[in-house]
Amino acid sequence: MESVLFFVAGVVVFLGLLLLLGAIRWERMRNLCLTVLAVLGSLLLVGVVSLVIAWVVMLLWNWVLPELFNFPEIKFWQSWALTMLIGFLKGS
Image (tube, rainbow, N blue to C red):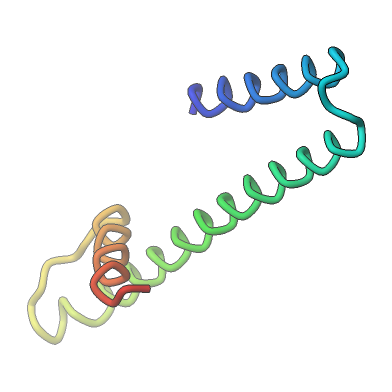
């Protein structure tokens, strides 16, 4: 988490220096900032959605499969890994 914060701070400082040195205009800077915010927001949304889907998979697995097929119960990160594996195998 700290490395992400350092990266974001570095990008902000770099863009601020470009703006102060006159190498970039204010309109371009605003567009760059909006683009960075859109990308970060999209990554956050994808992460939250994948965690919610993993939680649903865990609940369904632990509710149905141990009773029907005598499978062991799984933990949250195991369900997340299973969800990612299925996504990779399906190609989505």
